[in-house]
Image 1 (cartoon, rainbow, N blue to C red):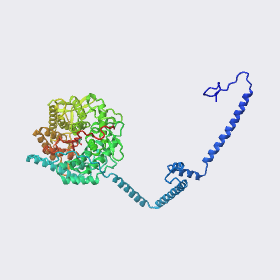
Image 2: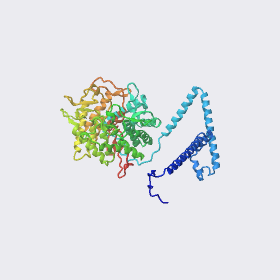
Image 3: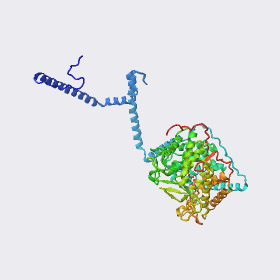
Length: 635
Ligand code: DMJ
């Protein structure tokens, strides 16, 4: 077929009338158009009618469509003639559809009958039924939480899990005294606070704080386990293990601190597992870790400070600058999480903490310092406050310990630690007029000449990191550790009770003393004794055992009460009042460091063990050339 020359190859034809042309053909064309229009009208009326009839069909046809909907898997087989579940016979399939329809109807009727019967029951009977059903569902959920068996991994070589007998009788006597103090703390908790998180040793009842939400998870039991084990208190250890096996349940509607639960519970359970070899501790640690993972669901991967163990919903502390997460909290997960990946083969834990490290590495740091606050939504720093005490402390500690725990292969962690410490030395560490070295706090470009009890742990950290520091600075860092130990000892020695205050100043003629009333308390904290112990291990200078013994005696004299040990509100008062709390870290850390101070170095040698920030020892992972599962993968 040819195309008329005037007709464009595409587009609509535009009718044109040339001048002088007859009007007749035009008239004929108009008539044809109207006929077409009428035909079109009739056609559309017919289609409308058909549609109407279709939609107003009687109910039975709708039922058929419903049945067909249920069988949408089956129908294609019937239509295509292929073998379906009914062997490809359409009649058989039809019978089956009908039977199914009657089945559904019967089900509905049965449900209706049951509902009628239920409504006839008394309110009491109904309530009883609901309670029984609730209990059954709860039981089933609990069953799901039963420790699953985990893939076996080679146990790292555990060196130095021994008695650590110090040899000299006078040292042994001191060590026995510390063991007796542990027994008093444990027995009191066993008697008055069993199963609660902590103990009120004067009121003689259970105690808890907001870091554990409203949970009752036996924090003292979990935190104390490895100390009991090391001290050879095996009956007590067994008691704790039994409680954990039967009662430790993480399916609780409690909003807990991710950091605290990690260092006390996961750290405590992992250490108990490594020391005793009891699988239950590993399984419980993994169960709990799974509950913490939702805290990392933030736009940046920086975890929330708190997470609800049941719902997985996370949020930050209301007091933290601009909705920020805290450096010492999200920066103190590495040790435990690396062990979790090692033990389970699940790369998620490792990836989460490595992601945090990578993110921090990319950020600008004011004066090379890490601010304590980081917003997990925006990935921006909050207030420019830097501290080696509260809010910052264990972030630096975990950089160093990540390197140590990797058998000194994690060079990135070591470099990050060295750079951070270098900036801290430049901006935060000063000598007082009286010659005491102190670590102040950096607040928006200004140095506050105040040091916290918490900051005193840094003496031990500097000593621990001395070997392996860049250049020839090992001696310098060991010396810095000794100076911090000395300053912190002074903060104890300048009080009436010979126990250190929560914070002390180096200002306006003041040297290592607290000024404000609310900084004069001592709550059984370990940091000063922790530093004595590290200094003892690295120098064997007898003064550290002497200082440790002074502190132990002061604790026994002023903090010991009938129902355990209590913090005191004013270390400068000869007649102190108690805060009535026996902190779980007193059993996990303070008494453990004291015991180790009077033991031989063969007990948990530092070449083979790294203590987490709650003093829970975890073995060095000598992975040689092996890589951690997931070390190549992204978050
Ligand atoms: C402990 O829970 C840990 O040492 C933590 O890192 C900070 N301080 C308390 C005890 O003072």
